[in-house]
Length: 99
Image (cartoon, rainbow, N blue to C red; front, top):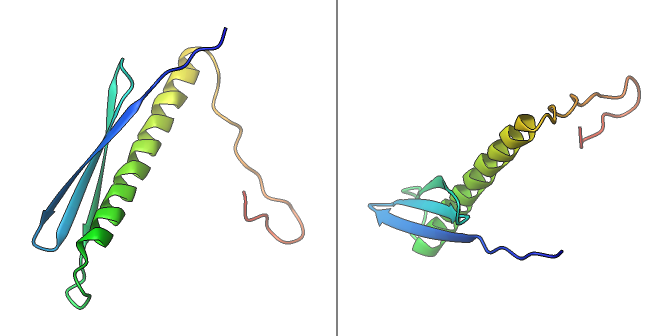
């Protein structure tokens, strides 16, 4: 049977004196996870607040993704699924950039 769930992410952005801080909050309906990100304007650069917002928000969302993956890993281990085997490199030839 097909099901549909909706998870909501809200992003809060705070700016103060050349520093932008973002907080991304995932609400699954059962739990919440929060990621944070910061962007600072280089004093030599032109201050364009939208760029700071984008950087801080993307960093907050990336942190949120890492935390969600850790939760999933713990849940997998809780049901007996072990960790993935370590990646290995080829013993000859060019190294695989995906490893």
